[in-house]
Image (cartoon, rainbow, N blue to C red; front, top):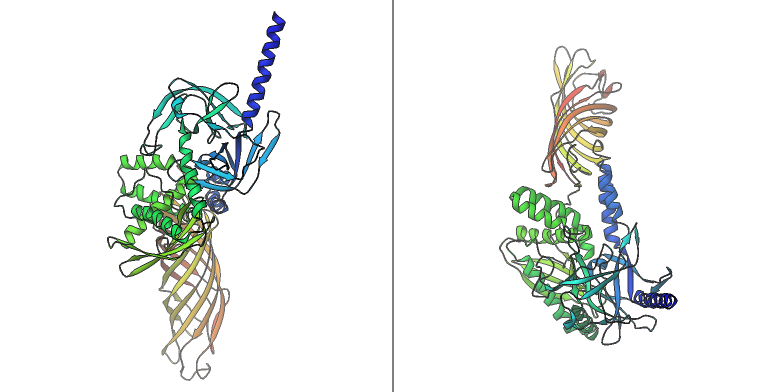
Length: 611
């Protein structure tokens, strides 16, 4: 009897193993590589944090340049195409991906083909289509009437464990067969299935399954969300929603070469975008997917910094906390896209005000719908025309560029976690424009004394190596008057021009917060100075007949001062006190007249701007 029981148990286990092996051939591991535009952006942000001394934030943005993974499952559409279903958030910022099926023994089989990706702009769903093949086993849909509270369900996928994606099949029950949560899905679009079958990071996009018996697993939904702070609370998008994406795919395939349909499709999606730009108040709780991937990567960080400054300076504490929570709930990629959308709206409102706008039409549309196709159009605002480019990305049109709304200088600073050791940002590059007031006095060796007065303007370009060290290079141009005792008790005035090219090392100590920064500094360097005298008649002296002359001098200088910066606004001002002195004498070809020590003390007043 025991032997027969043992044999029966073994047979059941072998059968179950075979069934699970079949299920593994239908559930995929989706490995994604990030979009190269985001890699470049995150690399720049990481370098800024590293220079600012925030290695933790730098490491975080370095990690975002690496790939990630999620799950998906095979499904066959009515037209026979084999479709991989997953969540939009799994693949939407990917540039390349691998779709892998792993056997029980760890063997891998990669799904290959010419992928076509369609994303749902309103639901967190995406489908990847490719020609059908008999090598794989697509899953079938369950009847929606079979979704009931308390039924046993399974969640399949590849959550991460010890840094590696590993197969997981978890069991639970439906705890709410029909739940509406505004923060996750607009109730007008549909409902969610709440269940207790465990899902973890990496499970996203995997199927929620109903076992009909004998290994006949049917799809109830697509696992998408878990809830922090509650045990066994997970949500799946009903599988019936897959039809939305398949309908969009079929529509695109049917009309891909129809210019009139393409124009109407463009207009319809543009109308949705324009309605968002025409809002009086920005809705922080709504997704804004109409910003292209490249535009989000290029403009997102600077837009995010402006958004942080806007929230910090204008909102009340309660509103600020709510908006901060919204931003923190998004992935870094989504933060950049949402910030870019906000920046476009904010720029649109501030630059165009209440003038109103109309769409003047598309001047160029693609002949066929292909990934990356560009349409060119114009938006009219009063007597101004703004050029607009739309790009076709994964089944939808997005704004690729909108003239003048992203024309402001970028905010070249980086935010990081609170450290209590100074500001959360630093400026990477500054241009400095200003004037030196030069009430200087010095001695000359020509039979008496001489004095110099005058001033010069200067331009300097300053690059920060890190928060505490900066290098400056620039040039200045000045006008001076040299008064000295000349002939038989008379006083002569000599006017001359000075040109200087200083190289300066700055040691700085930033202090402040996110709104303003005080930066005391100590500077030291040297310059090659060139002087040209302007007088034309110098009496009966040994000077040349026309009295003109040139001189060159190596002029070291030291200084101290303080910069006052407004980081979010991109400018500031400064005050410094500088001492310069020559190595050797400076001759202006005036016979016996030489200036042995060009010692002067100048007060430097200047403005600073990013470049």
